[in-house]
Amino acid sequence: MTTIRDIAKKANVSVSTASRALNNNPRISVKTRQRIQAIAAAEGYMPNYNAKNLTLGEANVVGVVFPAAENNVQGNPFYIDILRGINKQLAPRHYVLSVAIGDHTEQVFENVKSMVEQAKVKRFILLYSYAGDPVTEYLRKKALRFVIIGEPVEDKNDFYVDNNNYQAGIAGTEYLLGHLGAKHPVFVESSHEWPYERSRREGFQAAILRRGVSPLIYRLQKENNDGITVEFIRQHPEIDSIMATDDMIGFEFYHHWQCAHPGKSIPAVSFNHSFILQLANHQFHSINLFPENLGSAAVELLFTDKENKGGEEPPRKIILPFEIS
Image (tube, rainbow, N blue to C red; front, side, top):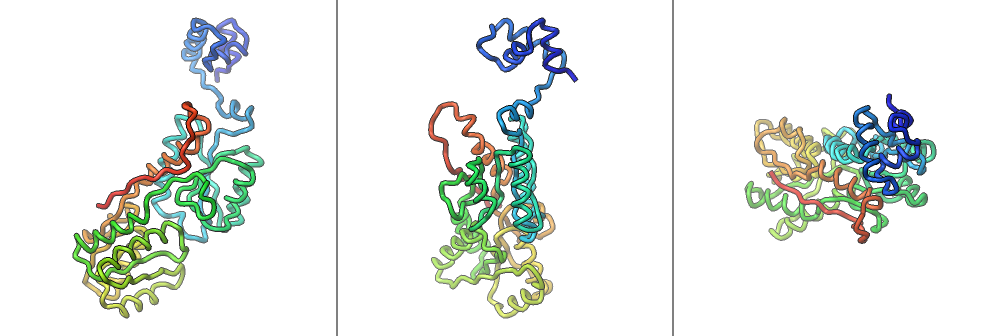
């Protein structure tokens, strides 16, 4: 592998001069910079960005923090698409992502601490937000740079990227009522009370109340849910449509509804527009939140402290659009 010393030797300059030339330092003449850069290109020289960052006390790594596995969200395709968007933005910045994951909140927290204290990771993207989260508290205490995907629960000064989930809840409900002919939809959510679920539920309730209908809410339980859900459906024969907080939840509830009503189908609207929809029929619709764009926007916000060349105050939040299909 070609090193900076090899480049300096071929160019007949010192290592420090070669380094400055490759970094476009104005102290080196344009002619010399061009000559050394041409030699580096011909030799296939690749800068060690990690070593460069470590001299500043920071690894060229962004920690991506998942909710604990006990929350049963890590298998959601939504997160895979977010990671894809994150990675697209990290590659041209010569950073890589490292995932913090664990079965319990304590394990996730210890994973993040190890990243910071042992691997010198100083930038993080959190794929969740909830009150009393030890990871968020730790990152704030350490004054480290982090961006939340979703609305912050405790500190509204945190950097975050999100969709307008309240308006998306209204739009999805109105689509059910206005385009799909629904009259008595049920809103289905998880048992975790995530902020985005609450916002979507509030949007659903606002749209339903405008029609003079009492909102019906159902919360899927993590375990032993099948019989309970089918019984709930049988107790509410008025249900003629489904509004769910994501595709996985919507597909699960739809399956239970068909168990209670064999051979029948009803329209459903959910969120995330994932590949799970390929398993459903034409009655299933989804609100596309463009998760890749969420991941990309999170990285852009994460690096505004280094890349804000105009000197203007960087945004603390980015709200992205959605689309129903």
